[in-house]
Amino acid sequence: MEGSHWVKWIKTTFFLCCFFLFPTVFYFLSSISVHRPVSFINSGNAPNSTFRLRWWIPSVSGDGTPPLALTLPSPPRFIPKKAMSSVERDLARARAAIRRAVSQKGNASSSSTPVTGDEYLNVYRNPAAFFRSYSEMKKRFRVYVYEEGEAPLVHDGPCKNIYTTEGRFIQDLDMMRTIRTRDPSLAHAFFLPFSVSMMVKFIYVPDSHDHSPLHRFISDYLHVVSSNHPFWNRSAGADHFMLSCHDWGPYVSRANSELYNKSIRALCNANTSEGFNPRKDVSIPEIHLLTGEIPVEIRSPPPPNTHRPFLAFFAGGLHGPIRPFLLQQWQDRDPDLRVYQYLPKNSNMSYHSFMHKSKFCLCPSGWEVASPRVVEAIYTECIPVIISEGYVLPFSDVLKWDEFSLTVSVADVPRLKELLSRVTDEEMERLRGGLRAVRRHFVFNQPAKSFDVFHMILHSVWLRRLNVKLP
Image (tube, rainbow, N blue to C red; front, top):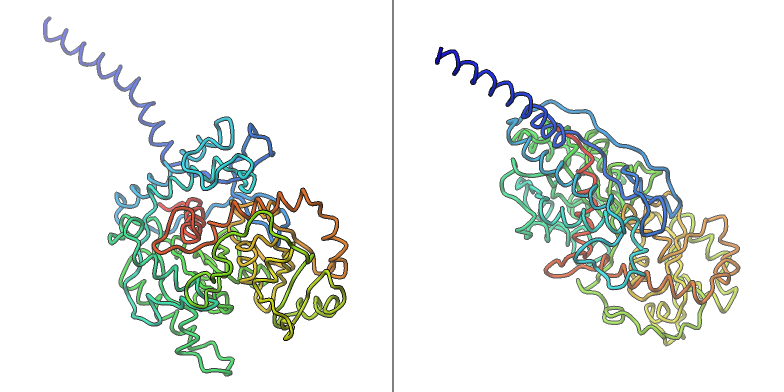
Protein backbone atom coordinates (compact mmCIF):
# COMPACT_ATOMS: atom_id res chain seq x y z
CA MET A 1 0.00 0.00 0.00
CA GLU A 2 2.83 2.33 0.95
CA GLY A 3 4.73 1.51 -2.28
CA SER A 4 1.61 2.30 -4.33
CA HIS A 5 1.41 5.69 -2.60
CA TRP A 6 4.98 6.56 -3.61
CA VAL A 7 4.40 5.48 -7.22
CA LYS A 8 1.32 7.70 -7.37
CA TRP A 9 3.27 10.63 -5.88
CA ILE A 10 6.10 10.22 -8.43
CA LYS A 11 3.66 10.09 -11.34
CA THR A 12 1.85 13.21 -10.13
CA THR A 13 5.12 15.12 -9.68
CA PHE A 14 6.35 14.10 -13.13
CA PHE A 15 3.07 15.20 -14.72
CA LEU A 16 3.18 18.61 -13.01
CA CYS A 17 6.80 19.17 -14.05
CA CYS A 18 6.02 18.35 -17.66
CA PHE A 19 2.89 20.53 -17.59
CA PHE A 20 4.61 23.65 -16.24
CA LEU A 21 8.23 23.34 -17.38
CA PHE A 22 7.86 22.14 -20.97
CA PRO A 23 6.01 25.28 -22.26
CA THR A 24 8.55 27.49 -20.47
CA VAL A 25 11.54 25.69 -21.95
CA PHE A 26 9.94 25.63 -25.41
CA TYR A 27 9.24 29.38 -25.28
CA PHE A 28 12.81 30.15 -24.16
CA LEU A 29 14.37 28.06 -26.93
CA SER A 30 12.07 29.62 -29.50
CA SER A 31 12.85 33.16 -28.36
CA ILE A 32 16.61 32.76 -28.75
CA SER A 33 16.50 31.03 -32.10
CA VAL A 34 13.91 32.99 -34.08
CA HIS A 35 15.60 35.45 -36.43
CA ARG A 36 13.92 38.77 -37.13
CA PRO A 37 15.67 41.44 -39.18
CA VAL A 38 16.54 44.59 -37.25
CA SER A 39 15.80 48.08 -38.53
CA PHE A 40 16.14 51.71 -37.58
CA ILE A 41 13.08 52.94 -39.48
CA ASN A 42 11.11 55.62 -37.68
CA SER A 43 7.47 55.99 -38.62
CA GLY A 44 7.52 59.63 -37.58
CA ASN A 45 9.58 62.44 -36.09
CA ALA A 46 7.76 62.64 -32.78
CA PRO A 47 9.60 61.23 -29.73
CA ASN A 48 6.84 58.70 -29.06
CA SER A 49 6.67 57.31 -32.60
CA THR A 50 6.26 53.59 -33.16
CA PHE A 51 9.12 51.83 -34.89
CA ARG A 52 8.72 49.17 -37.56
CA LEU A 53 11.21 46.40 -37.05
CA ARG A 54 12.49 45.99 -40.56
CA TRP A 55 15.80 46.28 -42.32
CA TRP A 56 16.56 49.81 -43.51
CA ILE A 57 17.91 49.93 -47.05
CA PRO A 58 20.12 53.06 -47.00
CA SER A 59 19.13 55.98 -49.18
CA VAL A 60 20.62 56.39 -52.64
CA SER A 61 21.95 59.94 -53.05
CA GLY A 62 19.56 61.10 -50.34
CA ASP A 63 16.38 59.67 -51.85
CA GLY A 64 14.20 57.51 -49.62
CA THR A 65 13.99 53.81 -50.37
CA PRO A 66 11.25 51.47 -49.12
CA PRO A 67 12.20 49.10 -46.29
CA LEU A 68 12.72 45.45 -47.16
CA ALA A 69 13.12 42.37 -45.01
CA LEU A 70 16.34 40.45 -45.53
CA THR A 71 16.87 36.76 -44.89
CA LEU A 72 19.55 34.47 -46.24
CA PRO A 73 19.30 30.71 -46.74
CA SER A 74 20.95 28.55 -44.14
CA PRO A 75 24.17 27.05 -45.57
CA PRO A 76 25.55 23.64 -44.65
CA ARG A 77 27.01 23.28 -41.18
CA PHE A 78 30.75 22.61 -41.08
CA ILE A 79 31.65 23.51 -37.50
CA PRO A 80 30.43 22.15 -34.17
CA LYS A 81 26.79 22.96 -33.46
CA LYS A 82 27.57 24.07 -29.91
CA ALA A 83 29.98 26.77 -31.07
CA MET A 84 27.59 28.10 -33.69
CA SER A 85 24.55 28.13 -31.42
CA SER A 86 26.52 30.16 -28.86
CA VAL A 87 27.32 32.84 -31.45
CA GLU A 88 23.77 32.88 -32.80
CA ARG A 89 22.29 33.07 -29.29
CA ASP A 90 24.49 36.09 -28.65
CA LEU A 91 23.15 37.80 -31.78
CA ALA A 92 19.57 36.89 -30.83
CA ARG A 93 20.01 38.58 -27.45
CA ALA A 94 21.32 41.69 -29.20
CA ARG A 95 18.32 41.78 -31.53
CA ALA A 96 15.97 41.42 -28.58
CA ALA A 97 17.71 44.26 -26.71
CA ILE A 98 17.37 46.56 -29.73
CA ARG A 99 13.67 45.75 -30.05
CA ARG A 100 13.10 46.49 -26.36
CA ALA A 101 14.83 49.85 -26.80
CA VAL A 102 12.65 50.91 -29.72
CA SER A 103 9.47 49.63 -28.09
CA GLN A 104 9.95 51.95 -25.11
CA LYS A 105 8.57 55.45 -25.25
CA GLY A 106 10.95 58.15 -26.44
CA ASN A 107 13.76 58.07 -28.93
CA ALA A 108 16.55 59.27 -26.65
CA SER A 109 16.30 56.57 -23.99
CA SER A 110 19.96 55.69 -24.17
CA SER A 111 23.14 56.22 -22.26
CA SER A 112 26.43 57.61 -23.58
CA THR A 113 25.10 59.62 -26.52
CA PRO A 114 27.71 61.18 -28.81
CA VAL A 115 26.17 64.65 -28.65
CA THR A 116 24.55 66.84 -26.03
CA GLY A 117 21.07 68.22 -26.60
CA ASP A 118 17.91 66.57 -27.87
CA GLU A 119 17.83 68.83 -30.92
CA TYR A 120 20.87 67.00 -32.32
CA LEU A 121 19.17 63.61 -32.08
CA ASN A 122 17.34 64.48 -35.30
CA VAL A 123 20.44 63.44 -37.27
CA TYR A 124 19.67 59.79 -36.41
CA ARG A 125 16.95 57.74 -38.07
CA ASN A 126 16.11 56.12 -34.76
CA PRO A 127 18.25 57.32 -31.81
CA ALA A 128 17.01 54.66 -29.37
CA ALA A 129 17.76 51.82 -31.79
CA PHE A 130 21.14 53.25 -32.79
CA PHE A 131 22.47 53.81 -29.28
CA ARG A 132 21.24 50.42 -28.07
CA SER A 133 22.65 48.68 -31.13
CA TYR A 134 25.97 50.47 -30.69
CA SER A 135 26.07 49.47 -27.02
CA GLU A 136 25.33 45.85 -27.91
CA MET A 137 28.08 45.94 -30.55
CA LYS A 138 30.66 47.22 -28.07
CA LYS A 139 29.62 44.54 -25.58
CA ARG A 140 29.28 41.52 -27.88
CA PHE A 141 30.76 41.94 -31.35
CA ARG A 142 33.88 39.87 -32.00
CA VAL A 143 35.74 39.82 -35.31
CA TYR A 144 38.28 37.23 -36.39
CA VAL A 145 41.00 38.60 -38.67
CA TYR A 146 42.52 35.94 -40.90
CA GLU A 147 46.26 35.72 -40.28
CA GLU A 148 47.11 34.33 -43.72
CA GLY A 149 49.08 36.62 -46.01
CA GLU A 150 51.89 39.10 -45.54
CA ALA A 151 52.38 42.85 -45.92
CA PRO A 152 52.20 44.91 -48.02
CA LEU A 153 49.26 43.22 -49.80
CA VAL A 154 47.65 41.90 -46.61
CA HIS A 155 47.50 43.33 -43.08
CA ASP A 156 48.64 46.70 -44.41
CA GLY A 157 47.26 49.66 -46.32
CA PRO A 158 47.80 53.33 -47.20
CA CYS A 159 47.36 55.76 -44.32
CA LYS A 160 48.51 59.03 -45.90
CA ASN A 161 46.55 59.59 -49.10
CA ILE A 162 43.05 59.51 -50.53
CA TYR A 163 42.73 55.84 -49.49
CA THR A 164 43.39 56.58 -45.81
CA THR A 165 40.15 54.91 -44.69
CA GLU A 166 41.34 51.58 -46.10
CA GLY A 167 44.75 51.56 -44.42
CA ARG A 168 43.64 52.98 -41.09
CA PHE A 169 40.80 50.49 -40.69
CA ILE A 170 43.00 47.49 -41.52
CA GLN A 171 45.69 48.59 -39.07
CA ASP A 172 43.30 49.71 -36.33
CA LEU A 173 41.40 46.43 -36.40
CA ASP A 174 44.67 44.49 -36.22
CA MET A 175 45.45 46.34 -32.97
CA MET A 176 41.93 46.31 -31.50
CA ARG A 177 42.12 43.88 -28.58
CA THR A 178 38.54 44.33 -27.36
CA ILE A 179 36.80 43.54 -30.65
CA ARG A 180 39.30 41.26 -32.37
CA THR A 181 39.26 37.66 -31.19
CA ARG A 182 41.96 35.04 -31.70
CA ASP A 183 39.40 32.25 -31.36
CA PRO A 184 37.41 31.99 -34.62
CA SER A 185 34.71 29.84 -33.01
CA LEU A 186 33.72 32.90 -30.94
CA ALA A 187 33.63 35.30 -33.89
CA HIS A 188 30.44 36.87 -35.22
CA ALA A 189 32.22 38.08 -38.37
CA PHE A 190 35.44 37.36 -40.26
CA PHE A 191 37.62 40.06 -41.84
CA LEU A 192 39.56 39.53 -45.06
CA PRO A 193 42.50 41.92 -44.47
CA PHE A 194 43.76 42.39 -48.02
CA SER A 195 44.25 45.90 -49.43
CA VAL A 196 43.05 46.63 -52.97
CA SER A 197 45.06 49.87 -52.96
CA MET A 198 48.28 48.00 -52.20
CA MET A 199 47.49 45.43 -54.89
CA VAL A 200 47.14 48.22 -57.44
CA LYS A 201 50.45 49.67 -56.28
CA PHE A 202 52.48 46.46 -56.28
CA ILE A 203 50.99 43.90 -58.69
CA TYR A 204 49.03 45.94 -61.24
CA VAL A 205 50.92 46.82 -64.41
CA PRO A 206 50.39 50.58 -64.96
CA ASP A 207 48.25 51.52 -67.97
CA SER A 208 47.70 47.85 -68.83
CA HIS A 209 43.98 47.96 -68.00
CA ASP A 210 44.45 44.34 -66.95
CA HIS A 211 42.82 43.52 -63.62
CA SER A 212 43.59 39.81 -63.83
CA PRO A 213 46.60 39.91 -61.44
CA LEU A 214 44.34 41.42 -58.77
CA HIS A 215 41.62 38.87 -59.48
CA ARG A 216 44.11 36.00 -59.21
CA PHE A 217 45.44 37.27 -55.90
CA ILE A 218 41.97 37.50 -54.35
CA SER A 219 40.95 34.10 -55.73
CA ASP A 220 44.13 32.51 -54.39
CA TYR A 221 43.73 34.21 -51.01
CA LEU A 222 40.16 32.97 -50.60
CA HIS A 223 41.23 29.49 -51.67
CA VAL A 224 43.87 29.47 -48.91
CA VAL A 225 41.40 30.78 -46.33
CA SER A 226 38.67 28.31 -47.26
CA SER A 227 41.16 25.41 -47.30
CA ASN A 228 42.67 26.25 -43.90
CA HIS A 229 39.40 27.11 -42.11
CA PRO A 230 35.79 25.86 -42.23
CA PHE A 231 34.13 29.25 -41.78
CA TRP A 232 33.98 30.53 -45.36
CA ASN A 233 32.39 27.30 -46.62
CA ARG A 234 29.96 27.22 -43.71
CA SER A 235 28.29 30.51 -44.67
CA ALA A 236 29.30 30.85 -48.35
CA GLY A 237 31.10 33.99 -47.14
CA ALA A 238 27.95 35.69 -45.79
CA ASP A 239 29.52 36.46 -42.38
CA HIS A 240 32.80 37.66 -43.94
CA PHE A 241 33.67 41.21 -44.94
CA MET A 242 36.26 43.06 -46.98
CA LEU A 243 37.01 46.80 -47.06
CA SER A 244 38.28 48.95 -49.89
CA CYS A 245 38.47 52.67 -50.63
CA HIS A 246 40.03 52.23 -54.05
CA ASP A 247 37.86 52.92 -57.13
CA TRP A 248 38.45 49.34 -58.24
CA GLY A 249 37.19 47.73 -55.04
CA PRO A 250 33.83 46.74 -56.57
CA TYR A 251 35.48 45.33 -59.70
CA VAL A 252 38.13 43.18 -58.07
CA SER A 253 35.56 41.69 -55.68
CA ARG A 254 34.08 40.02 -58.75
CA ALA A 255 37.07 37.64 -58.62
CA ASN A 256 34.93 35.38 -56.42
CA SER A 257 31.17 35.10 -56.94
CA GLU A 258 30.48 34.46 -53.25
CA LEU A 259 32.59 37.46 -52.23
CA TYR A 260 30.67 39.64 -54.68
CA ASN A 261 27.17 38.29 -54.07
CA LYS A 262 27.19 37.07 -50.45
CA SER A 263 29.92 38.78 -48.42
CA ILE A 264 29.70 42.19 -46.80
CA ARG A 265 31.72 44.63 -48.91
CA ALA A 266 32.63 47.89 -47.15
CA LEU A 267 33.32 50.30 -50.01
CA CYS A 268 33.96 53.99 -50.56
CA ASN A 269 32.79 53.55 -54.16
CA ALA A 270 29.25 52.68 -53.05
CA ASN A 271 27.66 52.94 -56.48
CA THR A 272 24.47 50.97 -57.07
CA SER A 273 25.07 51.09 -60.84
CA GLU A 274 28.31 49.14 -60.26
CA GLY A 275 26.78 46.39 -58.15
CA PHE A 276 26.75 47.95 -54.67
CA ASN A 277 23.97 46.21 -52.77
CA PRO A 278 22.81 48.22 -49.72
CA ARG A 279 21.04 45.14 -48.33
CA LYS A 280 24.40 43.57 -47.51
CA ASP A 281 27.17 46.06 -48.42
CA VAL A 282 28.45 49.00 -46.35
CA SER A 283 29.14 52.52 -47.62
CA ILE A 284 32.19 54.09 -45.94
CA PRO A 285 33.48 57.67 -46.18
CA GLU A 286 36.47 58.65 -48.29
CA ILE A 287 38.90 60.60 -46.09
CA HIS A 288 42.02 62.22 -47.54
CA LEU A 289 44.74 62.69 -44.90
CA LEU A 290 47.89 63.68 -46.77
CA THR A 291 50.08 63.51 -43.65
CA GLY A 292 48.00 60.98 -41.75
CA GLU A 293 46.43 63.80 -39.70
CA ILE A 294 43.54 66.19 -40.32
CA PRO A 295 44.99 69.41 -41.82
CA VAL A 296 45.51 72.15 -39.24
CA GLU A 297 43.10 74.49 -41.05
CA ILE A 298 40.15 72.15 -40.51
CA ARG A 299 41.25 70.25 -37.41
CA SER A 300 38.97 72.23 -35.09
CA PRO A 301 35.37 73.24 -35.78
CA PRO A 302 34.97 76.84 -36.96
CA PRO A 303 33.33 79.42 -34.66
CA PRO A 304 29.51 79.43 -34.96
CA ASN A 305 29.48 83.03 -36.23
CA THR A 306 31.99 82.45 -39.05
CA HIS A 307 31.42 84.94 -41.88
CA ARG A 308 30.59 83.14 -45.13
CA PRO A 309 30.35 85.63 -48.01
CA PHE A 310 30.17 83.02 -50.82
CA LEU A 311 27.01 81.08 -51.56
CA ALA A 312 28.81 77.96 -52.81
CA PHE A 313 32.28 76.64 -53.67
CA PHE A 314 33.87 73.89 -55.75
CA ALA A 315 37.36 73.26 -57.10
CA GLY A 316 38.43 69.96 -58.61
CA GLY A 317 39.52 67.92 -61.59
CA LEU A 318 37.26 67.27 -64.58
CA HIS A 319 36.99 63.51 -64.26
CA GLY A 320 33.68 61.71 -64.57
CA PRO A 321 30.56 62.92 -66.41
CA ILE A 322 29.13 65.30 -63.76
CA ARG A 323 31.98 67.71 -63.07
CA PRO A 324 32.47 68.91 -66.67
CA PHE A 325 28.74 69.70 -66.78
CA LEU A 326 28.98 71.60 -63.47
CA LEU A 327 31.89 73.73 -64.70
CA GLN A 328 30.25 74.31 -68.07
CA GLN A 329 27.23 75.76 -66.27
CA TRP A 330 28.91 77.77 -63.52
CA GLN A 331 32.65 78.36 -63.94
CA ASP A 332 33.27 82.15 -63.93
CA ARG A 333 29.51 82.73 -64.37
CA ASP A 334 28.52 84.16 -61.00
CA PRO A 335 30.59 85.72 -58.18
CA ASP A 336 28.35 84.07 -55.57
CA LEU A 337 29.19 80.58 -56.86
CA ARG A 338 32.96 80.07 -56.76
CA VAL A 339 33.34 77.16 -59.16
CA TYR A 340 36.84 76.37 -60.42
CA GLN A 341 38.84 73.59 -62.00
CA TYR A 342 41.94 75.04 -60.35
CA LEU A 343 42.09 77.71 -57.67
CA PRO A 344 42.91 81.18 -59.09
CA LYS A 345 46.66 81.79 -59.10
CA ASN A 346 46.19 85.36 -57.90
CA SER A 347 44.09 84.31 -54.92
CA ASN A 348 45.52 84.48 -51.41
CA MET A 349 42.94 81.94 -50.19
CA SER A 350 43.61 78.22 -49.82
CA TYR A 351 41.22 75.41 -50.72
CA HIS A 352 40.08 75.04 -47.11
CA SER A 353 39.79 78.82 -46.70
CA PHE A 354 37.24 78.85 -49.52
CA MET A 355 35.30 76.15 -47.66
CA HIS A 356 35.33 78.22 -44.48
CA LYS A 357 34.07 81.24 -46.43
CA SER A 358 31.25 79.40 -48.21
CA LYS A 359 27.74 78.53 -47.07
CA PHE A 360 27.56 75.44 -49.29
CA CYS A 361 30.25 73.10 -50.62
CA LEU A 362 29.42 71.38 -53.90
CA CYS A 363 30.30 67.67 -53.86
CA PRO A 364 29.88 66.26 -57.37
CA SER A 365 30.96 62.71 -58.09
CA GLY A 366 33.96 62.03 -60.31
CA TRP A 367 34.71 58.64 -61.82
CA GLU A 368 34.01 57.32 -58.33
CA VAL A 369 30.78 58.38 -56.61
CA ALA A 370 32.52 59.15 -53.30
CA SER A 371 34.56 62.29 -52.73
CA PRO A 372 36.78 63.33 -49.80
CA ARG A 373 35.34 66.86 -50.00
CA VAL A 374 32.14 65.53 -48.37
CA VAL A 375 34.07 64.85 -45.16
CA GLU A 376 36.08 68.08 -45.54
CA ALA A 377 32.78 69.97 -45.81
CA ILE A 378 31.63 68.33 -42.58
CA TYR A 379 34.86 69.41 -40.86
CA THR A 380 34.45 73.03 -42.00
CA GLU A 381 30.67 73.10 -41.41
CA CYS A 382 30.19 74.06 -45.06
CA ILE A 383 26.87 72.42 -45.90
CA PRO A 384 27.57 69.56 -48.37
CA VAL A 385 25.57 69.58 -51.59
CA ILE A 386 25.60 66.03 -52.96
CA ILE A 387 25.46 65.88 -56.77
CA SER A 388 25.60 62.25 -57.76
CA GLU A 389 23.74 59.33 -59.26
CA GLY A 390 23.51 55.95 -57.55
CA TYR A 391 25.55 56.99 -54.49
CA VAL A 392 24.59 55.31 -51.21
CA LEU A 393 25.79 57.80 -48.60
CA PRO A 394 28.02 56.60 -45.72
CA PHE A 395 26.26 55.37 -42.57
CA SER A 396 22.86 56.21 -44.08
CA ASP A 397 21.50 53.15 -42.29
CA VAL A 398 21.57 55.24 -39.08
CA LEU A 399 22.15 58.87 -40.18
CA LYS A 400 19.56 61.14 -41.79
CA TRP A 401 21.66 63.01 -44.33
CA ASP A 402 18.91 65.53 -45.03
CA GLU A 403 19.51 66.86 -41.51
CA PHE A 404 23.02 68.06 -42.41
CA SER A 405 23.29 68.13 -46.22
CA LEU A 406 21.40 68.86 -49.41
CA THR A 407 20.99 66.68 -52.50
CA VAL A 408 20.69 68.17 -55.98
CA SER A 409 20.04 66.06 -59.04
CA VAL A 410 22.37 66.34 -62.02
CA ALA A 411 19.46 67.64 -64.10
CA ASP A 412 19.04 70.55 -61.65
CA VAL A 413 22.66 71.74 -61.82
CA PRO A 414 21.67 74.70 -64.07
CA ARG A 415 19.32 75.81 -61.27
CA LEU A 416 21.92 75.58 -58.50
CA LYS A 417 21.87 79.24 -57.48
CA GLU A 418 18.08 79.34 -57.48
CA LEU A 419 17.83 76.23 -55.31
CA LEU A 420 20.53 77.22 -52.83
CA SER A 421 19.23 80.78 -52.51
CA ARG A 422 15.89 79.44 -51.30
CA VAL A 423 17.48 77.99 -48.15
CA THR A 424 16.75 80.36 -45.26
CA ASP A 425 19.25 81.42 -42.61
CA GLU A 426 17.31 79.40 -40.03
CA GLU A 427 17.48 76.32 -42.21
CA MET A 428 21.22 76.78 -42.79
CA GLU A 429 21.80 77.05 -39.06
CA ARG A 430 19.82 73.85 -38.51
CA LEU A 431 21.93 72.04 -41.10
CA ARG A 432 25.17 73.34 -39.58
CA GLY A 433 23.96 72.12 -36.20
CA GLY A 434 23.59 68.69 -37.78
CA LEU A 435 27.15 68.92 -39.12
CA ARG A 436 28.43 69.65 -35.62
CA ALA A 437 26.51 66.62 -34.32
CA VAL A 438 27.88 64.13 -36.88
CA ARG A 439 31.46 65.42 -37.11
CA ARG A 440 32.89 62.84 -34.69
CA HIS A 441 31.41 60.02 -36.79
CA PHE A 442 33.80 61.00 -39.62
CA VAL A 443 37.03 61.41 -37.65
CA PHE A 444 39.83 58.86 -37.19
CA ASN A 445 41.43 58.82 -33.75
CA GLN A 446 44.62 57.16 -32.55
CA PRO A 447 43.70 55.06 -30.69
CA ALA A 448 40.12 54.70 -31.89
CA LYS A 449 37.42 56.33 -29.74
CA SER A 450 33.73 55.57 -29.30
CA PHE A 451 31.49 56.76 -32.13
CA ASP A 452 34.41 57.68 -34.40
CA VAL A 453 34.63 56.58 -38.03
CA PHE A 454 36.34 53.27 -37.18
CA HIS A 455 33.52 52.29 -34.83
CA MET A 456 30.84 53.57 -37.23
CA ILE A 457 32.22 51.32 -39.98
CA LEU A 458 32.21 48.39 -37.55
CA HIS A 459 28.65 49.22 -36.53
CA SER A 460 27.50 49.13 -40.15
CA VAL A 461 29.09 45.69 -40.52
CA TRP A 462 27.48 44.65 -37.23
CA LEU A 463 24.03 45.65 -38.55
CA ARG A 464 24.48 43.50 -41.64
CA ARG A 465 25.67 40.59 -39.54
CA LEU A 466 22.58 40.88 -37.32
CA ASN A 467 20.48 40.18 -40.37
CA VAL A 468 22.34 37.04 -41.40
CA LYS A 469 20.99 33.85 -39.81
CA LEU A 470 23.36 30.90 -39.70
CA PRO A 471 22.56 27.38 -38.37
